[in-house]
Length: 156
Image (cartoon, rainbow, N blue to C red; front, side, top):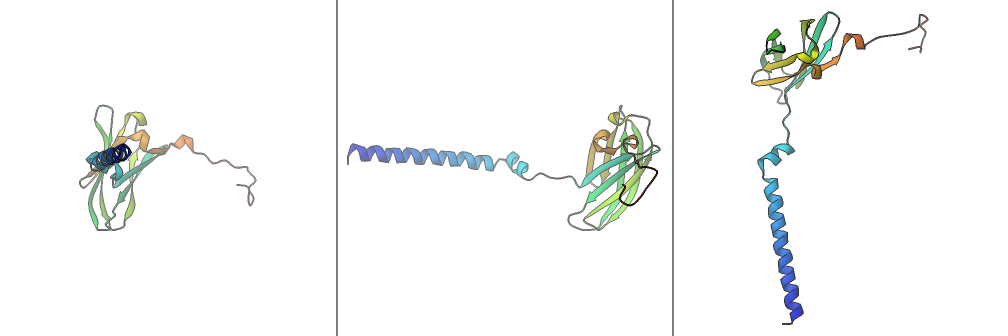
């Protein structure tokens, strides 16, 4: 065997070893539990959106039911103030067989600012808690309708 043949075969052996090592590193990252959970995020079955009018606060709670089994239980919504004190709470009985359904909960207008309130929603074993200003979609003073006094087809 010549020196060229030996150096080629040793080069091929080195490349094979490095390739196998790289493959083992990739496989170890793929089997990492943190990587697996990052690939398949779990979404909360509870989604909140709030609307604030001049005299009341409306919160729509969307409950996901991917199995389309009958959901039955008590939906509890709490508005929590700055000192972890519950400012207001509402319980609503739920019976749902649809895959997704919205449930409206009404509160009287609160004196605290939205930045200082936290919303907590519980249904069965699921729970979600988030700052109210992240749930709030529209404030009463941000919406307006304007039109001229002379309305005719196509003017709006």
